Image 1 (cartoon, helix red, strand yellow):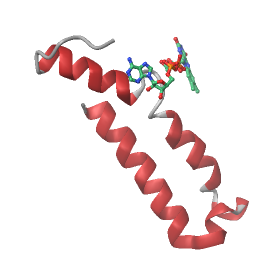
Image 2 (cartoon, protein in one colour):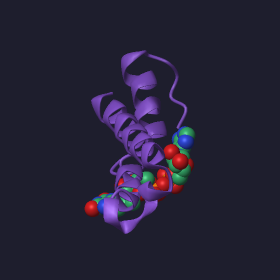
Image 3 (cartoon, helix red, strand yellow):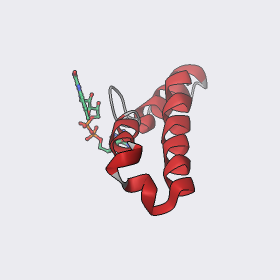
Image 4 (cartoon, helix red, strand yellow):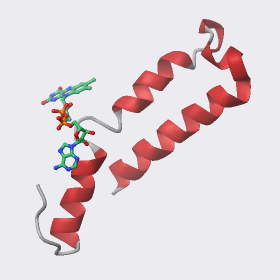
Length: 67
Ligand SMILES: Cc1cc2nc3c(=O)[nH]c(=O)nc-3n(C[C@H](O)[C@H](O)[C@H](O)COP(=O)(O)OP(=O)(O)OC[C@H]3O[C@@H](n4cnc5c(N)ncnc54)[C@H](O)[C@@H]3O)c2cc1C
């Protein structure tokens, strides 16, 4: 769950930072554009957020395995 929450917070923080700076948020000078990709990776690797939720629902909540 920590990995899931960290990835979501990271993506949200970077997106907010870019949006705060408007067009400048996407220029090389501010260094945020490359963080969009770096942050986005956290929602996919090493395990996607959907697979984290699948695992929690199965292992912690005792719901039927759906994958
Ligand atoms: C930068 C980077 C570095 C990596 N480095 C490594 C590494 O060093 N070693 C290594 O082993 N792997 C590495 N990977 C691979 C990484 O582990 C996989 O990309 C990751 O596990 C997701 O698997 P996938 O890419 O096959 O996507 P898929 O599993 O095909 O997922 C595609 C989409 O379908 C969704 N999905 C898949 N299954 C389900 C389901 N059952 N229910 C709901 N939604 C589902 C996913 O959430 C995602 O949105 C790396 C990936 C990246 C991007």
